[in-house]
Image 1 (cartoon, one colour):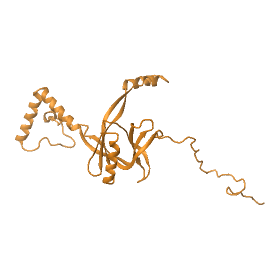
Image 2 (image 1 turned 180 degrees about the vertical axis):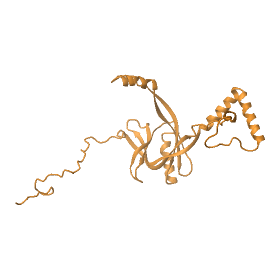
Image 3 (image 1 turned 45 degrees about the horizontal axis):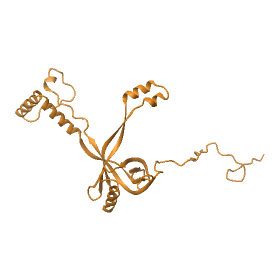
Image 4 (image 1 turned 90 degrees about the vertical axis):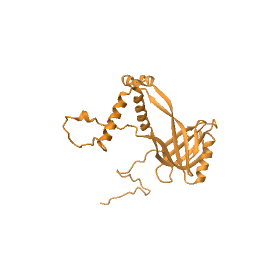
Length: 243
């Protein structure tokens, strides 16, 4: 008995294999990125840094020797003094005096702790193309947007910067290839009490009870570009909308 075979690539009516991958349907609408009503007035590839806090958690207070007396020592033994005994005594006396002097010394101690918590450093956010977008309806309204590239020199994908450019923003050149931008970011704080109430509500009641507090936070960004000429071009483009 002869068996007839058909091929999917021929003119016959062949069937697809069972393991064939089904392609996803093509989108009927173009994907929106929020830039449809804006015009790109400037674009450049740059590395982005952000000024962020370090040492937010203050170091724990020193362990008192008197509090550990009479207790069995286990584990790692930590040194209780550094230097000679006279220096240790002076330090102990100074600590006692500071504790009994009153609120003034307490305030100085709090100030010292706050100063330690407010140490800042530049941290790299990512590298990719940045764009200055100008609104089509108002040419005085602009923002700077940057997306991190997934491959070197490729298109930007993940959003890492989205800041409105205002007259209050300050832009200046730092070094030959660096431009600093001091701007404002909108921070949304959801009321914890409202969230607790929303958990007990049903349906549309959650949306009505949700409360958000909008605040402006000062942030500083640093752009590193390839050449000195690129830094000058970026500086001039930002100065059109900032100080």
